[in-house]
Amino acid sequence: MSTKIAYGIFDDDDVVLHAIPKLQEKKFKVVDVISPFPIHGLDHALGLKRTRISMTAFMYGITGTSLALLMMWYMNIWDWPMDIGGKPSFALYKNLPAFIPVTFESTVLCAAHGMVITFYLRSKLLPGVEPVIIDARATDDRFVMAIEVKTDADKDAAHAAMKALGAMYVK
Amino acid sequence: MALLWWIISVSYTLGTGLGVWGLNKTVGWAWDITNFVWWVGIGHAGTLISAILLLFRQKWRLSINRSAEAMTIFAVICAASFIVSHMGRPWVAYWPLPLPNQFGSLWVNFNSPLVWDVFAISTYFSVSLVFWYTGLIPDFAVVRDRAKSKSAKFWYTILSFGWTGTAKNWQRFEEVSLVLAGLSTPLVLSVHSVVSMDFATSLVPGWHTTIFPPYFVAGAIFSGFAMVQTLLIITRKVLNLENYITIYHIDMMNRIILITGSIVGVAYITEFFIAWYSGVEYEQYAFINRATGPYWWAYWSMMTCNVITPQLFWSAKLRTSLFATFFISIFVNIGMWFERFVIIVTSLHRDYVPSSWTMYSPTWVEVGIFIGSLGLFFVPFLLFTRFFPVIAMSELKTIVKTSSSQAKKKGAHHHEH
Image (cartoon, rainbow over all chains, first blue to last red; front, side):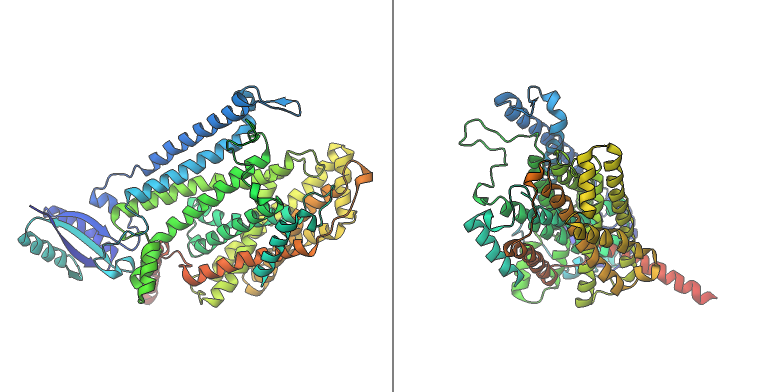
């Protein structure tokens, strides 16, 4: 059986936030809220897990650190050590102070770009993606609540419940 | 016009060679690196506003961060253009990159601050760009959903990457903004520190000082905020944004100009003191020569514009005056340009060997590239104000409601009396 979505359009973020627990009490499955700005406490109300995106940034960053050190070790220590101004490049740990800037920049570069690319892909944000627009003013000043339902009867019940809790109109 | 002069000057330089500039054997860096450092410094204010003030939860940054970030990006492009043109042979611009090459196993030297700079500037530019663009996505979606013409709808649909504003996306968006701010903060400090090490790790008197990294970072923020002021005073007037970019914002930025200007002033005095205290006669001469030598006028322009003029901001009346702010910001921009000119040219033109002492003056080509880079900066900035959301709308909405309900409460309270 395919699932359907009942939408309710609200005009106030506080009304939405207070409606969610009341709908959940009545066993409605609130799956999403589309809003023009981030609503604080919304992820908690919807039961969303904490995002792991900052963990990915950390891992990309560690990768950047290692790649930079490996590159500099290979190029300046292993493959072609040079003695410039009586300061030879014979061991990584001796050259480390001079290698810090590039290591740092590479860490930031990989962490930032890796995280942003992951964010775009995970959130399906790419040029050419056609947005699913329920209400054109949901990016301006309206809030769209989405409730997952199984039958048409459930859908009508969800619509009625949202209207009772302050929805401007339902869809 | 300026952009056209830039194109002519740069083409002439690249076609003929660096001989068309006023450089000589003694003064090998002059306007090119002055302009590079000046532009990079200007860029720093954008990152400071969007990253450091976000971490400090300074809400007043919200109405100015978007245009300041745009300024960062265009300023860094201008800075990079000077690096490429001062190479004289930009077709070998890939040489500082660590690539396998036709010269056998010859790699770039990672002990060199010039190589550090390649990494610092490219990281700074690309990270600022994604930070700015990621912040723009929800606002592009607003413009997309409000657009009436078909072509606008088409372009803003592409630019907004299909953003709708679901709960999970907002959650990730906020986390990404926070982490990017956390990464950009040390990044922006590192960039100007690395730029200063291009000088500080050399043995040239007047350059070889440990004070350079913090002093350059303070100077960068100082000049960057001055440029933000210059641009925003015009932008808010032209786009009628007086209700978003208020006198309060101007005042806050002027305070930062006052603080960083004072730091820069202390740094100048410290440099002089340390030169005397070091007992190194070459250092001492370099500084005496700066203040009283043939380039005394550049030194004293710098001192007047950077140390004296910002002190006028102790007066609340001047801090909140648009007219005064505009003029002082122009003075600071001029002063910070002279600072780099003084550091570079006065340190170089009289080196250890008096027989090679010489003077430097720019040719029309160098003037053209500098004036032209202003065109290179303002053209994309004006296009940005024309087509992109200048105010970070989505972020601003998060505080509009709380402040308006506070205002309502205040109003209700008022009625009771």
